[in-house]
Length: 225
Image 1 (tube, rainbow, N blue to C red):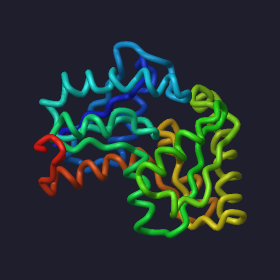
Image 2: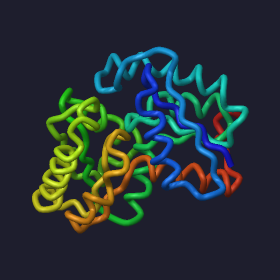
Image 3: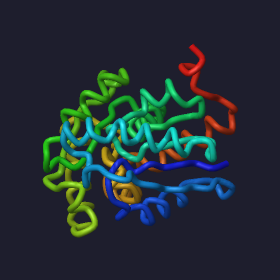
Image 4: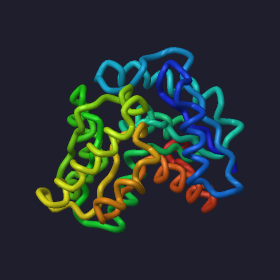
């Protein structure tokens, strides 16, 4: 099967890195291609960024989907995912939604730990409420860094994630942690080893959900309504 991953940003800085991470989670027979937008913001951390990328994501998906079995929009805010399900019959996956579904099958009290430099936590809270998981998410915690800081300060990022995840467990009662930014992909195992509760990688959750839906022969029913 072939899966298209769309990075909703106007540059290709992370494409090769993200392709490597997605392939590390994918089955051996799954082909993964990561593309970014022809234009757009550097990151999706502000409401105006989120609004800007939605039509751009939709345009890329409409142009490229015929060569792929499933699409992943590589941002934890799932920009354009809901609308694409009314346009493209193939599975369209959002990392936030996939992570919440997987986390809820192994725990009852979930906590999202994300980048918090620009106050994105309320947008994640809104997405969680829209998906109907607000009764299971006990907290959303942000580390004092932005997406562009992740690669520059990777060790610091992991230490912050461990610190906030431990607080989520001890103070909020969380039994599963979700990394709430696809820029944090690849860090879940390192955090899990220190926190001793399951930590869900949003990219891993997204690719496994895409593979499952394709293998089960399932599709978006909204297109046919």
